[in-house]
Length: 82
Image (tube, rainbow, N blue to C red):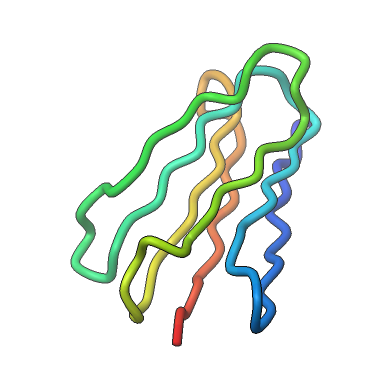
């Protein structure tokens, strides 16, 4: 069974997301609190992780969703930038 995982790294000097999954070609999307899709990325085949900088985003609440191929598994993580 597929089990996408989302790990967040958020320090004072670096705002970034590291998304990890155990499936190939997962889809990563970032939405704001209003539901607007701000970013969509597809992880390359055999690439199990993706790092995304959040420095360009204003403070607020965001939702990161990682979806496996065929939408058989989904993981969503709430992110609050201050």
